[in-house]
Image (cartoon, rainbow, N blue to C red; front, side, top):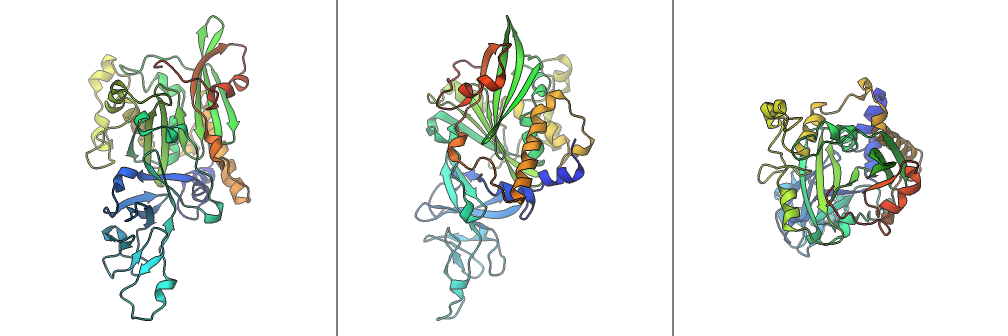
Amino acid sequence: MLSREENELLTRVGPGTPMGKLMRRYWVPALFSGQIEKPDCPPVRVKLLGEKLVAFRDTDGRPGLLDERCPHRTASMFFGRNEECGLRCVYHGWKFDVTGKCVDLPSEPPGSNFQDKVSIRAYPCHEAAGIVWTYMGPPELRPEFPEFEWTQVPQSHRYASRHIERCNWLQALEGGFDTSHLAFLHRGATQAPRSVPSRYDVIPKEFGFVVGTGRDAGEGETLWTANVMAMPFHKIIATDPYGAHCWVPMDDENTMLYSVDYRPDRPLTDDDLALSRNFEHIHAETIPGTDLPVENAANDYRIDRAAQAAGPSFSGMRGLAVQDRAVQESMGPVADRTIEHLGVSDTAIIRIRQLLLKAVRDLEDGKEPPGMKGASYRVRSARFAAPDEAAFADIVDERVTLDAAPVMEARL
């Protein structure tokens, strides 16, 4: 368990908070590029790390991310006119470019130099994998963009979705690395019965760590699953196609979950895409035109008690994404970790908290956060059999290092 102070330290992400400062040292997904598809398109509201922002694409095609509040009278820039390489507030006509510079101030008299003194908070953007990413930290400390494999493959090789989770980002992230729940929560028609792991290991890396869970494969072998945890909120999942999650904090009590299926070696087939879009796995069905899931707390995630009792579904809920979200949101907006009782199977969760606490405290002491080099993220997850006597630490690198790791060939 954590102390109440530690829990607060890890879960609060707003401006000026220790975790908020750490999060702002990384590139963060803000929205899909398709949400601001064309130059001079309407702006879109974005909420990141407790900040209300607006995104737009200017006349030259450059994405911009600005404070939603106009610095004049704090009216919402969401209602602004996107025109001629800038977003113009409809209240008094003040106009700002993607860098936050005021490029027109028509309400001031001729000869005034007030325009040179005015700017709006703006964050730099980078587009990769059909996502607009932003950096919200000190400009002089901007890191390299993380070279996740799924951000480097062609569009035809990946499928991405996103939806909102009504809970704190950390309990969502921890749920992604909870190993023993696979044998229970996800047991059912779409998830073959799996034994609880008997071996657990966590190997620190520059980007975060690799989580190893081993199951007895018989004949003197252990079947290892190696999942990647990358700072500050990423997971590469050992499935085929490969999977990826980003649990992006909107604020302290809401999380935007980006989910990706991808193949490094070929385009996704129609069968691959059908599996991604049937909402039985990591993607969630959302209400059209929104990021709000169809199954939610208001309808009890459409739990089917008959299916639960009869056995086709252990949880009675449809799909991995719904099952995960239901239990994570059931913990409350921010889970109280002071009343938990963790066991050996929670090794990865314990190590996540240790890593994040150390990173937050190191940053407060002026030390560099982990994962500032883009190339350090060139890893993939894996599943493989190894002799029982082999130490996970000795065999994991050759399986997860991107340039050396074999591509999984069969659906696991």
